[in-house]
Image (spheres, rainbow, N blue to C red):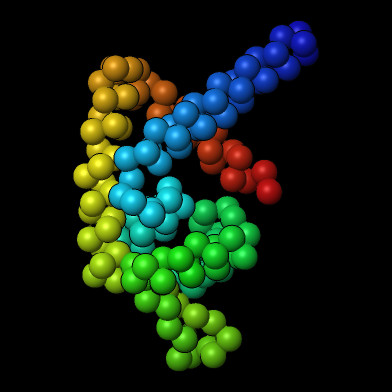
Length: 147
């Protein structure tokens, strides 16, 4: 029984890792020149939440190190996609907000990504996608609590 569970677990995670790699490769090819998936993810998050965030909060949200987030934010700031300012209430912290250029870059990325994502959903079938979403969401939530 344990061997069956182990084989099932390995197969599940192997499929997920392979799908993740293939999706990242496919999406990277259609993103606007110079934009990485991590850049889009941060811009999208900032646009959706509509509020400033600290680099530490962003690192926690994306489950990356603070150094990795600082690197991503530095590239986004250099491109003019985010504004990073001191926190006037706590000089030790910085606050990050999406810029108008960042909003435009996000919209361009969404326009490029949408056909790819829609094609995948169409090929899988909306019923299959709706059926798998709760399982994937539950898996993500369990993995988030395992830290």
